[in-house]
Image 1 (cartoon, rainbow, N blue to C red):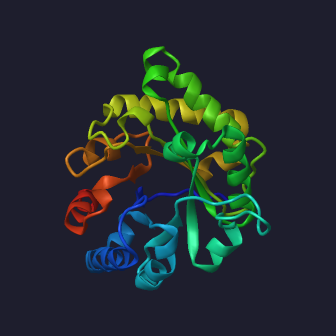
Image 2 (spheres, rainbow, N blue to C red; image 1 turned 180 degrees about the vertical axis):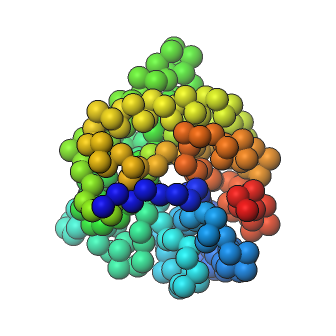
Length: 258
């Protein structure tokens, strides 16, 4: 049965920031507003703390409607893979969403398209929703390869993927060169990238599964520019980094939806 998501999706990536205690305090503050303002009827919110904070944040979010996400996943369920975390362990902690292929992992940890594809398949096999991150570097952009890179990362990342009944896959377009810079791309460019993603998805998934996908924009999203991205018809939400680390600022962003 198609998921047909109707609510905007906001995914907060806290990266390697905040202690366990700070993560729980932030989760509690967001929970209070999310519940009090009945945001659950207006948007779907996913928080992705660091691995050590997952259990504490899961407890803080219980019964709120806010979803728990992880920042990465390994492609094996168990084995001699030092430092990695399996999809089954993430599920046990209450995780339902997982970021896959973020540019920082590609850049700093040498994550390849082939590794990303294995992680997407593992996440789907475990019943998790992968948030596949794609986007071009500055040199790829200036050389006119932006659309080629986006399409290739989507095509490789989802190669061999199929969605079971009720499953969903999310694609987050994050131009690498704007992440953490405070400079976001114009909404029209984000919409164009979304079009490229959608056209590529047509090649990969049966028509019956396309309604189970969502396309987000990420890259220096903040309270001052969020509305312009939310209003873009081809985007279903946003992936937020730095602007999600402080309760007041992030709540200001979320309230643009209500």
